[in-house]
Length: 174
Image (cartoon, rainbow, N blue to C red; front, side, top):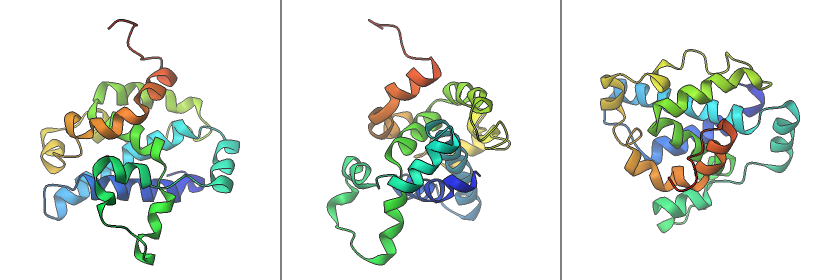
């Protein structure tokens, strides 16, 4: 995990797991967390590929989870206590890109192949097999987190920019 992106990665992973909770049990939670963390780490490295990008993120802040909460309906209960302060470290674009990667293993493979071109390097995510080659057990542990239709409202927020970055944008008229 890139040290300079750690707060964003932790908060964005936590947001995904709270919005799309694992099936149940400690093993399911661990498997879901590994998948979400891999997706968020990869998305964060692609979103903030240089040292300067990471420094600007640190200086300006990631923006928080307000729009994501609104899209999922989680904003129905205002969050104003200190226990929800972590939400300010959520990066909307990173979460959206991570949702795209969780919903589409082929896109995750392309994204992982682009990782060496970033400042963070090829080993940022480690072995991302759970993201790029999810097993049936991975899907059972995180059925909501891997469901393309459920992730679509979040993924669609910034899907076009991820596809443009990766050179996988659908052809016009498709």
